[in-house]
Image (tube, rainbow, N blue to C red; front, side, top):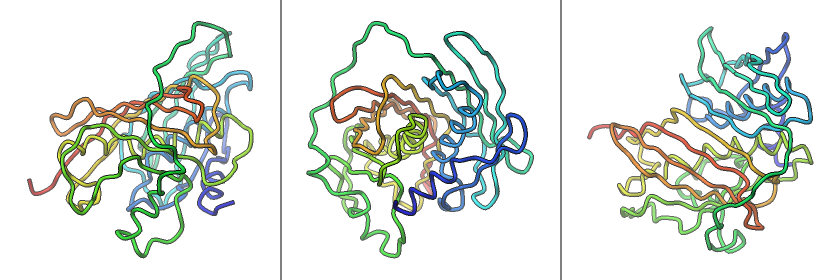
Length: 279
C-alpha cells in the first residue's frame, strides 16, 4: 500500500484513553497546521466507536475553531446526545493545549426503505482521460516527496501561469491510491478527508486568483456532509463543486459526489475565509 495512505489509515485508528475519549495525530504537516480533512476523518472515527454496527453515519455538521498543531496529539471527546431506535446523535470536540480546535455533531441511522430520486451526474470526461493533480502541479513543487493518500484529477484544469476569471464551478475525480478494504466507515472517513480539499478554492475561480499565490489565504470555517448510498472511495468518485456567494471575506460552497455509475452518494457544503493580503 502507498505509504501516505497507509499512514492516514493508521492515524485514523485512534487510541482509546478513557470512556468516549480518544487521541489521534496528524498524518502529515500541512504548512504548519493540521489539514482540516484529517480532523474530520478522525472525528468520524471517534464517534463511530460509540455506536452499534447497525447504525451508519448519514450526516455531519462541523466547525473549525482554531488551527491544529501537527506536532501535537489531538484529544477527541465524544458525547452521546441521543440513542434512539432509528437515529443516534453524537457530539465530538477535538482539543489541543486544553482548548477546542474543532467541534461536530454527527447523526447515525439504521438502513430503511423510502422514496428515491437524485440530480443527474454531469457529463464530464472520465478520469482515464485526465492527468493527476500530482503530475499537473509537479512543476510548482519540484522538491515534493511522497504523494497524497487521495489522487485527484481535475476536469478542465486552469492555466495556473495565466489565470483568467471563470465560472465558480469545478469538477474533480478522486480516489484512494490503493484498496482500503470493505468497511464502510473507513470509506466514509476517507471521503470526509478528501472533501475538504477542492471545495473552497472553487470560490477563487471568478477572481482569477490561484491557491498557489503566497498572499492568498483560504481557511475552512465550517463543513457539512451527508451520506446517501454506500460507496467505495478506492474507486473513482466525481466531486462537483459550486461557489454561490463570496462576501465579507467569506465564501460559501457546495458539492455533490457521484460514483462511476452516476449515483449521487454524498453531498457537502463549506464556508471559509478568503483573504488576499496586501489588497
